[in-house]
Image: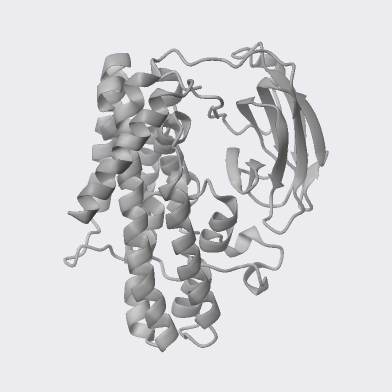
Length: 395
């Protein structure tokens, strides 16, 4: 009964908050990688000011920017040696981001910005942050064409979903990290994948907190010294020890930090108001992450439990679509039909590798043909889901 009252209260509070808010203040539109910047050909947002920025292995160039408030377009060139993400941060909270920009490629991020001082996260987690100053005086904020009242119920239910996943993450983290601290290698290995999936389902919201995203779910590639970097912590640091090094020795501080960070995440999400752009955009973000990183097997490279995370991302995306189903059906029934059909194809591909205990086979057991089929299906799904922002007027 306690949990029922807790989640009912969340719904009521969110409904009051969202109903009293303006329509979304900012959004990210999906942009295709291109080896050359073709800014002049993009006329979809003629009122947006365009700002060019390059990211190298050492940081952003320029490292300080000043723009006017309102619609802005950032043309981002990856001049580093690896895929990167670029973020606009307000404190530790991610305001906007563009992920998985391949080396040598260009992407555009479109957003509406309010006046203020922001940080820019430029490539490697260990790189110095840049500064972004947004001055008042730009064009008025663009408003979405969907009555935000139509999203109140969906956002409230999504907050409940994310809260439940985070609560379960904290509970499972305790069991998992206790096994690491106790030196029970076999138990810790068994619990790793089933614990990490709760992060993956709630990732569109969890990763809004850049400091916790860095400490809990970064990969070694995000740091200059790779696995040897002292800032490489969290799930994947423990994954390396458990599955590659096959030891729990020296992992107590990392396990204790992971549990502490999970509790911190739980507290932050409890008081967070989820914006429409975070929920609607999250459906595509989860699938794009699978398409661009997980399908290659790079995320869970030590344990090969990639299909667990793959499935969790699909679960999280499907939940968002299910909650938004009435408004998507009203706005674009053909798009919804395609999304449903593509989800079915992806689910069928995953089902082939389900194990009797409810988990998944390791990724090295997946045939190259099935990997190719999965990649095709997930790319088609990502393309369709990328249209949800525009369809629901939260661009």
